[in-house]
Image (cartoon, rainbow, N blue to C red):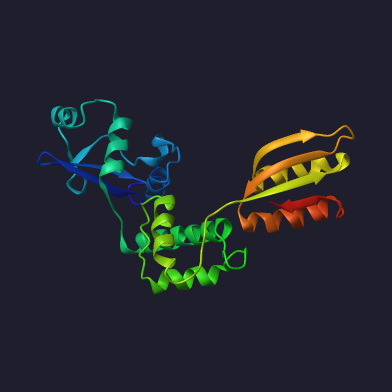
Length: 230
């Protein structure tokens, strides 16, 4: 269980009533991204408060009427989903920086410059985000923010999230070594083994992942892997 000193307030107001929970800010952020969290570890003090700073509990009858349930975890989830997180300025700064790094890394890994077919360097994405003055929200999902950012920076740099399709052939003796790399960097659309044991796959991936896959397969197969962009 997170300590009271490290917890933050998640607040939800409805029907003229205020409901608060005390939760680990990192757990709250993880939950906002759709991750499963350990509620026992995340919540600093079980229950729902009307004013946590004064130690005032929300009456059970009011909580039950507002949330139409007595299940605390269901109540916690609704407060996080529809309420606001009361972060300190330092907590917000740190969480914004972490979320921004994840967003930039995601764009670099999945987007490409349609003029060159290659990825944009991280600094170019960073500069574009600064130029459009986008403020990263530490609690909004990364996917939603990436969508917003791409719409904004498209006016500054050529960028596309389109995937590419690639055909790959690997000799039988290297399939076991390569398969993990293939599944981690691409989506396998189809695959089959030839009579000689070699493997042929049709893959979907980002341009950045293709460059990484070519390097990995070249190293693992001593240059014998065959790849072709379709």
